[in-house]
Every structure is written in structure tokens, then in C-alpha cells.
Amino acid sequence: MTPAFALEAASVRRGRAQVLQDVSIQARAGEVLGVVGANGAGKTTLLRAALGLVRLEHGRAALGGRPIRSLSDLERAALAAYLPQERRVGWNLPAWRVASLGAPHLAPKAARERAHAALARLGLAALADRGVLEMSGGERGRVLLARLLAAGAPLLMADEPGAGLDPDAQLLALELLRAEADRGAAVVLTLHDLSLAARACDRLAVLSAGRLIADAAPREALTPAVLAQAFALEGQLEQTSVGPVVAARRRTP
Amino acid sequence: MNDLRLNGLLLLGVLALIAAGLWLGEVPLSWAQFVQGFGHPGSAPGEVLWRIRCPRSVAAAVVGAALGLAGAVMQGLLRNPLADPGVLGVSGGAGLGAAVAIAAGLGAQSGAIEGAALVAAVLMGLALTALAARFREPETLILFGVAISSFSGALTSLVFNLAPSPVTLAEVFSWLLGSVANRDWGDIGRELIPMGLGVGLCAYSARGLVMLSLGEESAVMSGLPMARLRGAAVAGASLLTGAAVALAGIVGFVGLAAPHLVRTRAGADPGRILLPSALTGALLLMGADLAARLIPTDLELKLGVVTALLGAPLFALIAWRAARSWRG
Image (cartoon, rainbow over all chains, first blue to last red; front, side, top):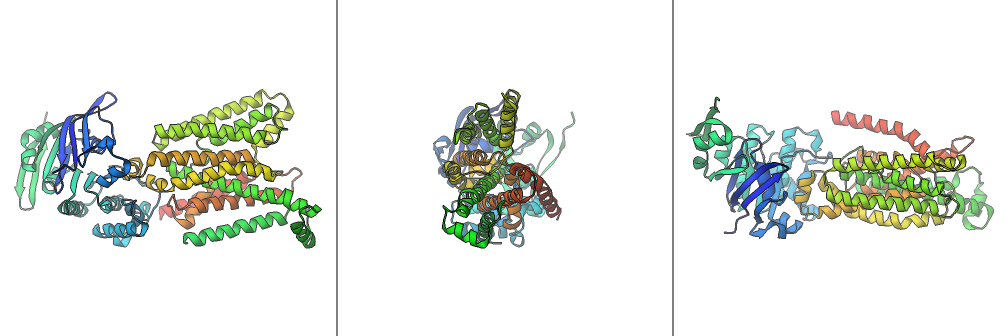
């Protein structure tokens, strides 16, 4: 099966800093891939490199089996949708309008219907006409997630989709992204909550200082050695009645 | 309010102010003279109507519309409610072109000052379009705009400094304060081509402006040709601003205030406010020109002075209302 995205020996440099180094990774349709790592480990850069939003120093990036540089803007948008970490919205647009921007190539009526459906899935039907600048940060985050869902692309990339959301909304967001994978999309997330990542993702890619140090099912990826190297944590992944939980504490120097 | 109703009402307002601009003026016309002048352009009242008042009203309308539209495009492009048509330095550049033409003694040649202002604005617009293609972040563009604006201001000051005579100095100063008095149909016709091109480019950029509300990366990932749309927005707003300055000198506040006034009725969608912002700009500038004509002063007030005098308090009122709505 053609991977939804593939990075091959990809390196990215920003100024003098090597932010991604020799990373090879793919995501396939129907799976949820989590990208985890400490602050500055290169998670956002990995997503941006995969989408062609940042220039590779070395290596190759492909979407849907085609080199990223050979795709037009429109072709890339048909293959992938992206929720950046930045949650700022410039103007006080109604929530439905923001969500409809996920599907700019549909006729206005169809885009509006899709936006309303996505907002309803996130429990925001009653707020569809409210301006996003009149909402809380968490509500605005859910509206932007609705925009991602409204895209209906075969690859959905979300940079910290749970940021600023309450626990229930975080779980709902991850459930909806899982539903997208079940309908055949490839879903790629960055997450800081390792327990949530272990429960929500089929596979975890662990980054440490720009290098990929693990790429496997959560139980195999989050070993004590990886937790120590990537997060400076002392602990392990434990199974509980609600799913896996990372039980860990800071390593004392 | 829906778009059709709002634009219809604004258009009616523009037509009403054009009618008022024909009716009101320094020389009072009776109803009979008005009717005579309307039907017979060669008669004395006809000269007043068709050669003085009508071009003046139309010039105010097109300059106001150009500034209102350019302001709305700039605010959308830069995601900044404080942006106006002059923020990237095009107004200052056009003013410099005009100042140089006057100082070089070209003032007597028909269209020379306007041509110099437009050429300078087009050069600035080309430079800015190239910069916008290279630097995508709005903050960077604003910084370049501040640099260009300051440099144009410095060069205009140099023209003042080196002006060969006090008469030249007064001429430059008077031109820069802005006016649509004594504009004829030829002056207006010359600016319609760059303005028409600017309107087309701005209309093309509209769907990119709304996407930019979500930030640069979301816009790039939307599949829209953002580089082209951004270039069209900068080039279109520059052409409109340059042509407006060429026709009327530097007129502030209209391009800043018109989009804000429109947002109170039409919502915040940067694409949807373009047409009503143009119509509101036309209304504001025609109103300011009528005020300049009718306020009894020994020397007629300059348009740029009136827009600043009326516009600043109006803008403070808009800011006050906006702040209240943001607080909820």
C-alpha cells in the first residue's frame, strides 16, 4: 500500500541548529501515528517537513507516493490537511465560517454543510454562529479541529490537537480522529500526554534532539530506556483498566 | 444585514451624495438654473455642474472607494486592524513623486504631477510585491513598509529643504494636503485604468484574504495559490493607493476607518467586506469634500485636513465600540 506520507533520511537545519536528523518514517491509511518527544525534539518540524512546509537539507519527502516538490498547491491540499500548533484567528469570523475553510474547494453551500456537520461532531452545534474571538481558547481549538475534520483529506496531520482542551474534549478529539482513521484516513498527531498517546495511537514515533529513536507500537516504543533518553523520565508503561498509562517521575541528576 | 441589502443601501448613499455634491457649492443655483445646467452643459450653470461640481464629486467618490478598498485589502493581508493603504509606504512614495515633479517645475504641464505620483507608486508597488513574495510574515512586510515610508518621508523633506522658492514649497505642501477641487474629467480618466486594474487584482485576492485569517501555514495548506493571491493583494492595493494619491494627494483615515465601519454591519470576513468598504470609503470622502466646500473659511479647507479632523474622533468612537464588544 502506498504510504500517505513518507520521509526518507530527512534532515532539516534551522540556522545553526540541526532540528531533524536523518529521519525515515511513513504513515499508512487506517492508522493513527503519534509523534512524541520533549520540547524542541523536532515534532512540529517532522510534520512540516512531511508536508513540504520546510525545506529539507537532505533526504526526500513524499505525499501519496509522489515527491512533495512535484505536487501543486491544490494536489497537496487534496492529499493532506493540517492543523498547525498556532491557534490564533485574525478576525472574529463565525465558527461555521472557520470550519468551512477546511473545504475551500467545495461550493459554498456544501462547505457550509460540511462545516456544520464537523462542528456538531465536536459538540459545537450551538456555537456555530458565534464569533471565534468571543470563545474560550479551548472552544476555538475545537473549532479549528472541526476545520481539519471538514477537509476530509486522506492524510490528517494535527499538531497538538489536545492543547488547551479539557479532559473530556481531549478524549472526544482523539475519538473523532480515530474515527477518521477507521474511515480510511491516515492520522498523524503530536502529543505531549504520553498516556493519552499510548492509548490513542497505533504506533508511536519518538524523537529525541531531532533523531528518531523509536518507531513502534506504544508498548514497544515507550520502554524505560526510551523514556529516559527522550524525556529524562524514570518509569514505564503500565496497563490499567482504562488502557496504558505512563507511570514515571523525573530522573534526579 | 445581508450583503445585497448593505451594498444596495451604500450605493444609494453614494448616489445621494453625488446629487448633493451637484446641488451644493460656492455659487448657489436656483432650481431653474439647475435644470437648465443639467440639460445644457454649454450654459453657464451647465459649466458649473458638468465641469466643476460633477468631476469633483466623482473624483471624491473614486478616490474614497479606492482608499476604502485598499484599506480593507491591507488589513486582511496583514491581519492587522491598524493597517491602512499607506502602511506599506505607497502613499509616501506617491507623495514623493509628486513633490519631485513640482520642485522640478513640471507643475504647469497637464498630468505631470499626477503621472509622477503614479509612477512612483507603481515602482513602490513592484518592490513591495517582490518583498511579499520573499517574506510571508505580515510583521516583516509592515517593517519594510515603515522603512519605505520613512525613507520616502525623508526624501520629501529633502525636497522641501532644497525647494528653489517659497512658492514651490507652498505648492508641494498644498498638494500633499490633498484635494479634489479643480479636477477635470481628464484627470479622473487617467487614473481609471490603474484603479480598474487594482480593483481586479483585489477582487482576485479576496479568497486568499479570508484564508489568511487562520495564519500563513493554514493558508498555504488550503490548496489556494497563496503566493499569487498575496502578490495580487499587494499589487492591487498599491495601484489603488497610488492612483488615489495621484488624483487627490495624501488623504488619511478613509482607508483605515471604512473597513472598521463595515465590520460593524457586515461581519469580519475579509473577503466579504471589500465591496462595502469601497462604497463606504466613497461615502466618507464625498462627505468630507462636501464639508470642505461648505465650512465657511477664507481659504477652502484641504481634504486631507478635513478627513483627519473628522476621521480621528470617528475612529476613536469606532475603537471604543469595538473594545466594548470585545469585552462582551
